[in-house]
Length: 302
Image 1 (cartoon, rainbow, N blue to C red):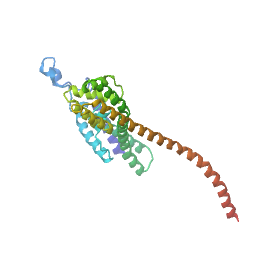
Image 2: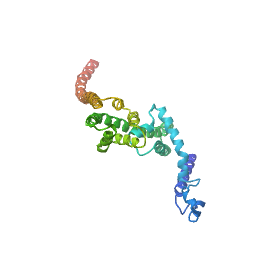
Image 3: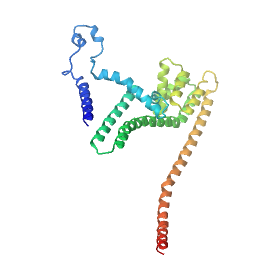
Image 4: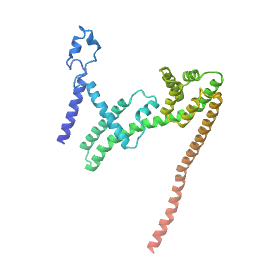
């Protein structure tokens, strides 16, 4: 108990120092800040960051958090790269910031589990399981949120892709070039495909060719229908009737979407019968158990 109190006091002191280091009245001004009004070269330097500051702490913890997160992800069988999933859902944070938050929540749950174990009269086995399981559960919950968002985005792209392919085929058939058609759909699109197309157009403006930007979209989206559509669009400079090919591909994607929708409806219909079956069988079992117990008591009395 004394050792635990010492560790908690040390962690509280380190956090207090990091917080107070950001306050101007507590930390000593650096030499760069003192000579900045008198030297023009000093203005180009970075802001103050001492040895015990939030900036220096972030520089130390960021690679460690990334290594811990990647190792735990591989340990639990998560093989897809986190950067690819974050790019797929258009996240505003990068991999390092996500891993730092993840490890931070693990540390908070770890300290909370230690405090609960020390304050509660529970057995040692349960305490060890709580201390080891709470940070792991926090890591898996955050990782599952990203995986769920990634799967939801892929489903939205697949559901919106037939309409996008049909509109693209109409624009190409009307005489638009591939670049102008993509730009037009990117400006008017509001869903998942629209956001992906805006990134494709942005990559084209950065210097990529249309084929490379579309193939990059297919790799990030990781949807088979997108790969097939991009393979058709790659024939832009070779095929003569690209609009007809895209229309055929749009009909094929729509058939796949319709088949998956029917499968989802049938699966949900089967799930509806599960509580109905349980609610029907439970009274029947009770009614059968009453005479069975009565018969057993009758035979045992004789």
